[in-house]
Structures are given as structure tokens and as C-alpha cells.
Length: 168
Image (cartoon, rainbow, N blue to C red):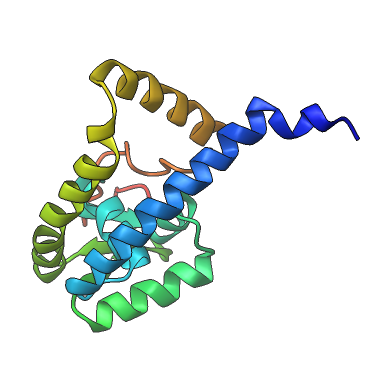
């Protein structure tokens, strides 16, 4: 085997990405625990609050996360029991439902987010010049869109209503 392959910048790039993610994830995990949410629950709350009407179809939520549809169902069940989310049936298609953030979910996110942003600033964005961050965000979006094309499913749609004419 060619020894130069181990110095390939592609391997270095992926290795650095994995190492950075692991380091940030460890810092986030401790902070989430302080607020009684798991990393998955935080991700679900963030994805829902960043979506029109603070809600997503369950299938879109699964597409946006690394969870299967059954995994999303289990997480939403747990978060619903904890009062952080509620389900809302689609008025035009009873087979489809939405996960909707409750006021308690918004409160939990509001309590968790300041510490989360401090960690991001201290250990990620604060390490980069603004121009470098802009280029990095562009590159990460390209990679994300290539490897996870469903990552924004439902997030740009108009907020659904309870009217029967709503498409679900």
C-alpha cells in the first residue's frame, strides 16, 4: 500500500470534522443534562421551533434528523408525555400528523439555548474569523445537501392551518 495515502487531505478533513464534532458533542451533552433534555430532544425542539408554526409533519421531522420514522415516534411520544410537544392531526389527511412545540417546550428551549450558544461561541464560531465562518458554512451546506438531501424537509413550507384545505 502506498504510505502517502495516510496523508491524504480527504482523510484529514473527515478526521478533523469527526474530532471537532465529538469534542463539541461532549460539551453540549453536559449542558443539556443540566436542563433535563437529551441531545435528540434538543435537536427536535430546535428543528421544530425553526420551522413555520413551530411544527413539522412527523415524516419531515424524521427526514431532518438521523432518526427513523419509528425513532421519531418514540422521541415524540416521550416529549409529549413530558409536555414539551403535542401532536396535531392533519385536517386533510388523517394518516399524517404534526409534532408541535408546546409553551413548556419553548420554555425549556429558552432555558437551554443561552448556554448552548455560549458553547458554540467559545468552542466553535469564536475560533474562526467571520470570513472563514462564511466559507465554512457554505461548504458544510453543500456537503449536508449532498449526503442528507432531506435535511430541510418541510422547513420552508408555509405553516399549516387547521382548515380542511391545508395540504399535508
